[in-house]
Image (cartoon, rainbow, N blue to C red):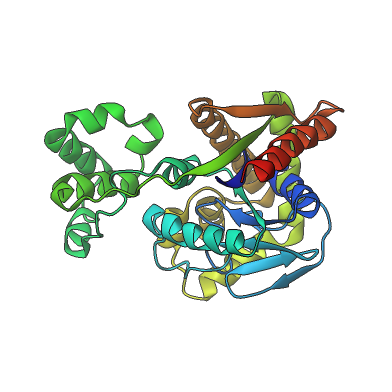
Length: 317
């Protein structure tokens, strides 16, 4: 069976740094699994750069870090929504290409929904975008969207978490899928030998790492990046749609957040919440080998686990 490795976990756990180390040892290339790293120009805010210093060159649809390719970077215009359907299609093509070249695909990221779609397939993926319906729904208030979804599918409403229920984009997509469900096609789950590695730590340490990450990204120029994107005709509304850092940065650029200190505090709080949601999502995933990043022996333990799987899988093919 063909194999690929998955490195998952909450933001700021060092997934990309680890993946680069493993790629060098096991002849691999990285495939980003992040819903916003796909966009051109969203570099600092989405954490495309790893924590460790590396030499970066940019190619068509990938970055190369110390000679290791990282795919699914810079493939979409930030003004145009990139969907999970697009991701599964693009990631599958990249993974197939990596395998054909005799290398190990290493999927790395924290967007659990994208990862689930890639690994398991989702029955709603092939429902096409209905632009006319979206134009009508985008005029609805959040409350109106919530009522609409409850009317047409109480079952779907019950299954949604609180975050999705407060997200107009997710509500619109849910309504779109239900109203077009006769057009639904299924992505078939492919046969892979997949090893899933999860990175975790205590909430206190995770928050500390996030807080340091935010300050580091501000120093690196995250505000200037957002200002440049806005001057490049990325609207404040679209920045809010992109979520998290860029939504908060839009408020700062519009003057709704009065100081850099307030900006930092709000960013840190928002990303704390995001990390909690990631952890909750990944708890539902099965067959993950979890490693605490504060364990001094974790790099050796993790590498041994990967080596055991990698070479056994090679022998079996």
